[in-house]
Amino acid sequence: MFDIKMNEQAARHMIVEVGRRLYERGYIAAADGNISVRLEGRRQLLATPTGVCKGFLKPEMLVIVDEEGRKLQGDLNPSSELAMHVTIYRLRPDVNAVVHAHPPVGTGFAASGIPLTKPLVSEVVLTLGCIPLAEYGTPTTEELAQAITPYVPHYDALLLANHGALTYGADLEDAYFKMETLEHFARIALVAHLLGQERPLPPEAVSKLFQIRQRAGRTSPTPSLCQVPTPSGRATEGPANANDRITLTRRQLVDLIAESIEATLAALIDENRSST
Image 1 (cartoon, one colour):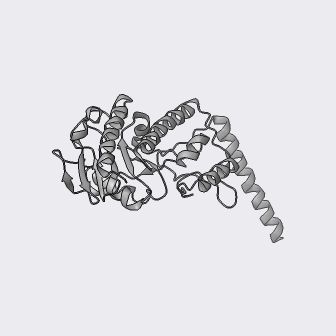
Image 2 (cartoon, rainbow, N blue to C red):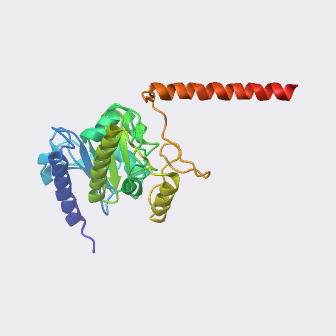
Image 3 (cartoon, rainbow, N blue to C red):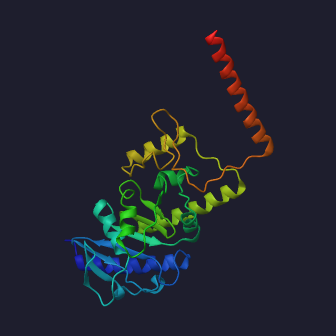
């Protein structure tokens, strides 16, 4: 028979362990970040407290709340960003753990308004699909929960604009490893960008990877946000960013203008011929 009490104790120790990992890897600093899990057999969540360094947690410091985030048990207060966790559990019955952190490179992308949606690495496409950027919401308010709501049903990892990153999964280990994958991919994407040689996977390769995801029963990213092949076989890009820049050499610019002029002249000639 399932022992609820033992499950709670195991969950407490696992949250402490994940908090330690996040802190030691530099994904959080000071009192940053928060972690929660569903308690099996109960309509309750076990969450980290607010104002405490998650790298030095003790099992007894954790807080039990109901499904709406109301405190039920614990000496400390639950995370002030618990509304974000509650939203995920409400929208994703398959999710049993949530991790929020501020990994430096991933958060750098979030602070720059750049999503991690390009299919640069096949393993990331398989595990996460892609990592979109949720609009900014004021921390500790309902704005943050509202900002992530459109994305939660379709993605298992998000960047939070000017804030950090969010991952969730079937259990706490799964949610934590998704955070590792997010930060690892952010580093790869940054290096590829700095080298100036980004080469996303071709649409047919991405299509095969998403077929594998579908067979595995994983979330289906929306084509409007990720570079997902459309029925025509072309890949769609994520939303254009107002700060995106295209850099051309003088020769490339001259050639582009020349091609445009030639195309315009050809169209005018064809138009005159058809009118005579």
